[in-house]
Length: 306
Ligand SMILES: NC(=O)c1ccc[n+]([C@@H]2O[C@H](COP(=O)([O-])OP(=O)(O)OC[C@H]3O[C@@H](n4cnc5c(N)ncnc54)[C@H](O)[C@@H]3O)[C@@H](O)[C@H]2O)c1
Image (cartoon, rainbow, N blue to C red; front, side):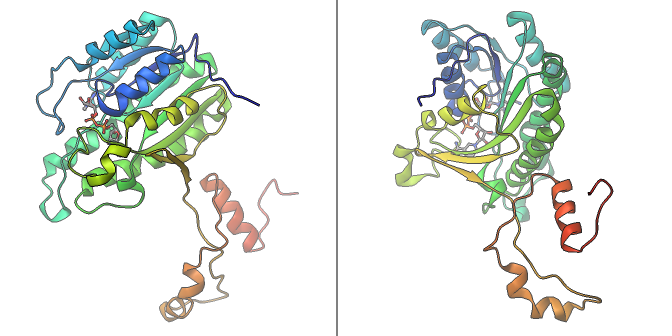
């Protein structure tokens, strides 16, 4: 069987799409027929100097390739801006099916040196921006009974990265938010997935060393387009993508140690090997799923169990 992903008639918002990964996602969505709102505040890497017109250039590129796009220069971190981004889609194209939350800035510092302004700015664009744009888009998608969200997490949030305490906190928050939106959107035909990309962009140009040449942003966008399509019914999942490798990332736990009766801190120390064992990984689909699993392990039947 050969799959052909077709986004004709679909309308997408890509935030931070004036360059780097967002530009690549916007071009890839348009190439499969989606109409695209190319959002970008046009800032420097650290979020300063707003006002560059990067989004306009991407619109020109999409139109030159025969697609339809509109530029938007609002900030994702502002609730009014987030609503304006969604309004741009509805006013210009009449609907909104796809949101790719991608806008981001960097203010790297170890926690030891982290300024409050740099914490707030990074949380505002990544975490608050992702939540605000999703919140603005949700009523439109619920009304349509259809929607596709892709949020941009990062290895820094999922696995940690030295010197990125603010960024890692924001990106881990995005991964958790995506899973919650997946649960809340399910009955409305709305999916929500997250990616942890690796690509050579202005954000990473000094970090990647010899890997840089292999990390074309265009290698991340096919996964994004798939997750944005009708073909994809996955939800609440997270994927790493970079250099042509695509893999699911999970949050799970092992079989663990089931204590009986009172437990002392010494018991924890004595059972550490079992507690840390992850050979039989369980990946719960939700908190409810985890609670049900625990109840079963404890031999407790919950209301509704037959
Ligand atoms: N490049 C990587 O390897 C990598 C790795 C992990 C995660 N990411 C994430 O991928 C996303 C894209 O990053 P990139 O590498 O393409 O960097 P980039 O700097 O090229 O792109 C980010 C874009 O977001 C825009 N932006 C910043 N603040 C905004 C705001 N408030 N509202 C709207 N737009 C705003 C910027 O103007 C910029 O064009 C980011 O969320 C980043 O954290 C990138």
